[in-house]
Length: 156
Image: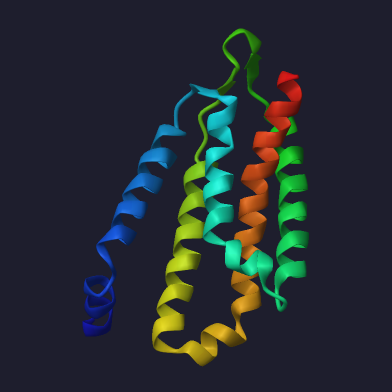
């Protein structure tokens, strides 16, 4: 119990702000809403910005790009099956309510949180399993990117 308390108390405050924002965005996704197409690309751009060092590194760059492309393909495929209505006159899309956004964003947060903790406390373990973090977070980033690209394509 002391370990969990220590982990929570030693977490920087800005991390809790990110969690609050993820919860806000995820809960908003529960209900049907109208979202502008550019707004759909904000999340993948933020996720890519978080991972920019990996995309430039020699060790995992290829895995990152392949995972992003695979995730984008998956995002396009899933979005095409459940596509919202395109509102060309206001450059937006009407999205159905879903729990998927919250689940994916919380999964990304927990993955980054766990590996952040490992890298600060057990760096050897974090380095040994870094490919898992790279693979999963790149897949999730690609999913959101593919979703945004699908709607941009449909809008044109």
